[in-house]
Image (cartoon, rainbow, N blue to C red):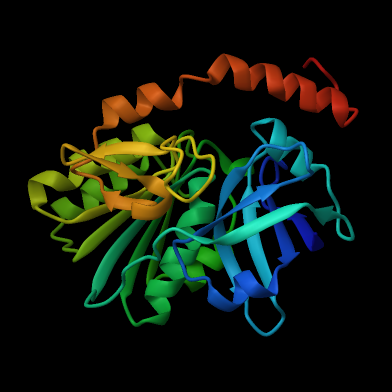
Length: 283
């Protein structure tokens, strides 16, 4: 059992949360880019979440998540002092930072929670980081101060222009590239469609583009094959070969099709979780 020692909403809309969990063995080993798998109770499904931060001395791990499915809705219902049944990690391969001098990190929506530890680790290693963070509107903006402190330059983009600049993250990335900006690497983390178009934007410039993939995952060991992705014509498993891959080699059409396969079943489970936690079932 793993104790929750802190919790806060990350944006004004209250759609994304940060939790601080006592997990000293995970905190001792984890690095930026890796993830954990949790279960809320003995009946819960196994759900992967990226490690957003950690404190080795305190033995705590920070996770950030958006309640979109049954398990994350149940997780959002827990408070400091409550316990999570399973919290396994660190899993996956950490972000590779060696030899980078200048990078752009692009986050979309809740993907900014995953982009944050990557930008932070790069910045701490002396990499000049341009951080581009995209949201639909001001009330969904999160981690603005943390991102600002983890980058040389921070650009906030919103679909409606209510905060920062109006437009998509690819608009800002294209502007920077056309203005002569050159990067050793671009990292994109967010919705699949966003990562696909970031990869298409950088391809003409020959810039290595790394994406963090979150396909359906079950055991986190590569044994089940549920998280398979096609990269450069080869089958890879996101839990052990990733989660970071070359975005210009990912078969995005296949990945997006598989990601939508259980959409109806997930909607049913959200309704069930809402019922279990006493929330409104409609509206």
